[in-house]
Image: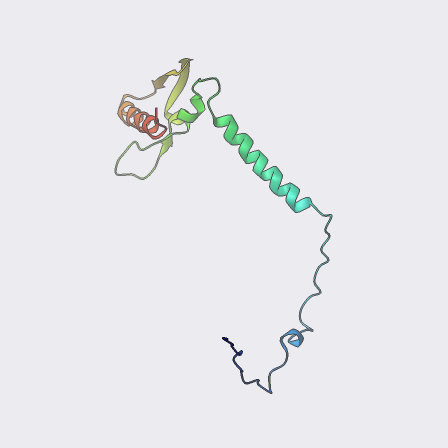
Length: 126
């Protein structure tokens, strides 16, 4: 038969038990109410709001949501790190189904906007 014995550690005489250390400085523990579901309800409400926002972003009925394209960020100048939303630079007009029309305000913005639209379409698998 195999037997083991626990290791014996030397006990210090000058140490106080852990429970009795600094008992006067700690605050009294708060009462825990088993019927208090406020934290749970707040967490569920937060998750519900997030899921409702995500559901609103989805395409409905196979139609394209123009807000998705309006929120795509565009780098107008490769040297600068500033980005702009397409909605700030152009108008996104849904033409029906999955086609949209972009009315770009300035001629210099056409190439960066079209490149970002193509990249955004490739990211979504379109």
